Image (cartoon, rainbow, N blue to C red; front, side):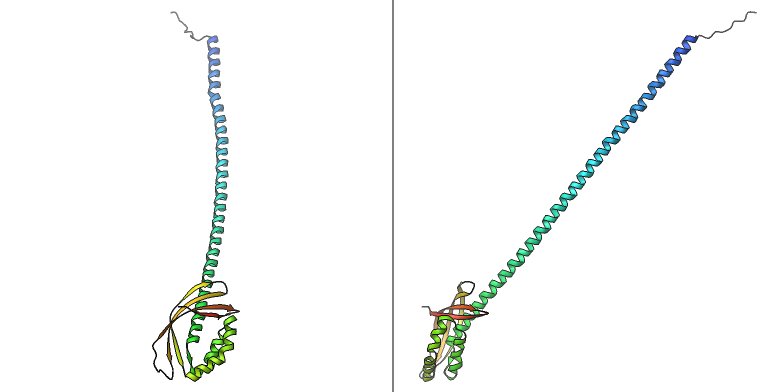
Length: 218
């Protein structure tokens, strides 16, 4: 019987060659992993830079919002203060105008409302509400005026129809006053109403407003 021994087709040289090829393949297989690690490291660096940049942008936005908010608060505070001051000034002007008008109206009533039976206090009321040139002139003529009123037994009563501010300054004003005056005396018990128009100048003395001049307007 003949026995044939099977011989391997792979020779020693072929085995070494295959081993070398396997080593090369292994090396090639490991190389992409290193590349991947490097790529991951680069990605982490870029991501960190982006996060840092985003954080800086957020801080800048917050600072800008704080600055804008502070400016808006300052502007609103200034506007509120100005509005409050303006309202206060307007109120002072309105109060002063009312004071000027009231002084002129009262001065007109004092001049046109006189009773011969109370001539002294009526005339003294005119003097007390006067100042300046009008005070000087009327004070000199007050006693002769009282004598005439008593002799004629005259009684007059004035009624204001309208009054308006013609001009004004910090301490002076001119007021136009329209009024009807009813006069009674011993000779004519009932006389028709008389319509008078007066321009009354007023002047502020300390905390009081007084009549400084009186003109009759046609």
